[in-house]
Length: 408
Image (cartoon, rainbow, N blue to C red; front, side, top):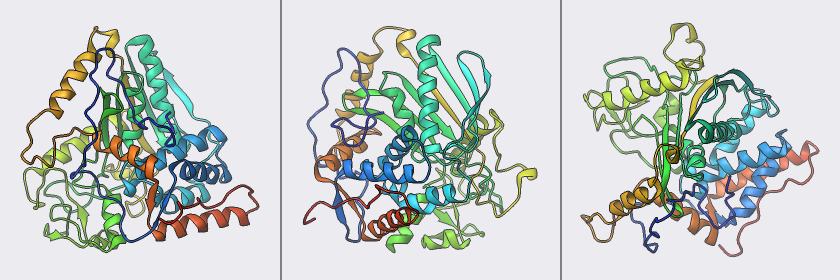
C-alpha cells in the first residue's frame, strides 16, 4: 500500500497505456473543508510514523501497525478528518484496551472456492484486515478474473475507499461494502425504531494518473463521523441529516449521541417522510445482504441480535471484491482515461468550480497535505499527546506525539 509520505496518491490508480495526463491542479471550491478551530500542521510522514508506533505499542505486529496507520491517516490526508485520527482515542484504542479488537488475531479461512473465500476475522484490527482482504481479492482476480472475499467477525476499518482503492492501484476495479455489525442507528422509512447502521459502500477504479475514481459513501445522508465532527466544532448540521422520532428536522448534531435524533437515509431530502428515503434504505439493505447476510456476520435488524442499546458494532461483516478488466478485454485503461477525461471536460455551471469525479478532491488534498503538512485541531493534538504519554507510562519505549511544523 502506498504510504502517506510518498509522492503518489494513497489511492493512486493508473489508467493504463494511452491514458491522458490529468489537467494541472486548480483551486477546488467543492473540496472537503479543512479542520477548523486552530491547531497546528504536522508533517504527513511524521503523523504516519507516530500512528504506526502507537498501534505497535498497543500490540499490533509491525506489518499490521503500518497498514492500520495508513488506513487511519488516510482520512486526515485526503480531507476527511471525521474518519481520521479523531477516531483513534474514540474508537480504536478503547476497542484494543477492552479486548473487542484482538491485535494479534489470526483470521481463519472457512471456505475457499478459488475465486471466492469466506473468512472469519476473529476480531482482528479492521484497519489492517480490510486491506488484506482486498489484497487477497486482487490475487484471486489475477488468476480467475474476479476475486471475492466475504468476511465476518470483523471490526471497524475506517474509510472504505482507502481499501477499495488498493485494487485500483493494480489496474482493477475494487468494491468494498460493510455493514455495522449489530449497530442500529437509522429506522426504515415509516418506522419508529432504528434498524440498520450507515452501511458504507465504496467502488474504486483506475481513472487518470494519480487521480483514481474512488466512490466512498454511507447509505445514510451523512456518516456518524461527520455528525460528531460538527458537534465537536459547535456547528449545526444541514436539514436532511437528522430527524427526531416524530420525523421532524433536527440540526443540533449533539442530539444524535443524546439519543434525541437519528440519521436520515440518502435521498430523503429534508423530510424523514420523503419517498426518496427508499433509495438510501434500499442500498443499506443491499449492503446488509452482500456484506453481512452472505458471510453470516451480525445482522442489525434480526430480533435475536437485539441486545444492548443498538450502538455496538461488534461482528461486522464486509465484502471485498476485485475485478481484473484486462482478463475480459483489451483497452480498458485507455477507455477509462477517455471516460474520466470527458467528465473533467464537462462544462460547469460556475467557471470557478470545475466538474470533478469522486476521488479527485481526495487525491488533490493528499498532494497538498504532503507538501504543507496536515493541520490538526488543538484538541486532537492534545489527545494524541495523552495517548503517547499513556503508552509511555505503560513502559513502551519509542512513542511520542508527532512534532508540529514550525510556526504553523
